[in-house]
Length: 439
Image (cartoon, rainbow, N blue to C red; front, top):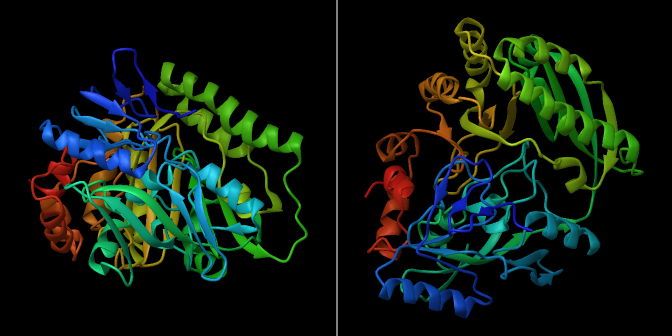
């Protein structure tokens, strides 16, 4: 079941509940040929076209009043090539189905984000990432891509075939065509040992470079209104597997992280003055734990508490300064922030509009519970992030436009030139792309 709500009157809503659209028609093609035909028909009818996955973006990147393509019938693994260690999947395949299917085949992606509800094409097109010292975003693991372009033809690209399209289309924002299949690099299934432990905010900042250098995957959550964080280090392990026990897993991941947290959010929304006290209690409720399991069971976790999110990538060297400014801003602002701030890293990659394009990056994500006013907090945070030449996640709330992106992405013009070539009539245009890429 898709987590996208579709109203009876044909209204589409995203997961966060902050974006809705009323497309002229919705199409769920069962094959690449049907998808290409839907694109050609939309063109003849003078309608714009957008594809949408599970609606996990907080921006209106997938919204349209034209034709909305739903890829839920374009799912499953097309082929596994054990010689080249790649897997080719249909664009509408949810990451959780891909992860489970790969595990059954004794394979895994190298790195992934912390949720796996999204479709492979939605996740990669917006630059979804996890955390890694040497391993990068999901899109950086792409070896080949197939997309239907504005004239209804099918274009295949890789490092060897149409390399200039490949450089951009791995994180294509839905602006270059509709992705129909993706080929990912995979590796033999491995084990990760996760070590989660609370750590004072000041200590994490003081030791950040060391924590980053010593761990394959390091991340932490800081609880605003407190000096506390929860850190997580994931490193490869020779085993044996020692998964979180069923009862402990339910208690820590469902009851505390989703159940109690949900109630705390409701209380905080109703009575904002209680938020700092709740934050102190929640940060103390966390205890250290260590477990070993296959990658997707360590990297990902269920997120049932709905929120709205802004995330920026800053140069990794600027992380500590940026976080200190963020904490000082929250402390003096009178804001009541009930959601932790998530911090992750990625190495530089070579994808044109990747948030880590050409620079080692650190990600800072700020969240607010769905239904609470987030504008004041996000605006103040964004002011800090942009002062460090931050690049916002394409699928998360931000107010930046093409003029700003031309400044923080050295290869921005390369992307817009390719878009002019592949979609000169802007069949795949919507308000969001007009703002971030220019008309």
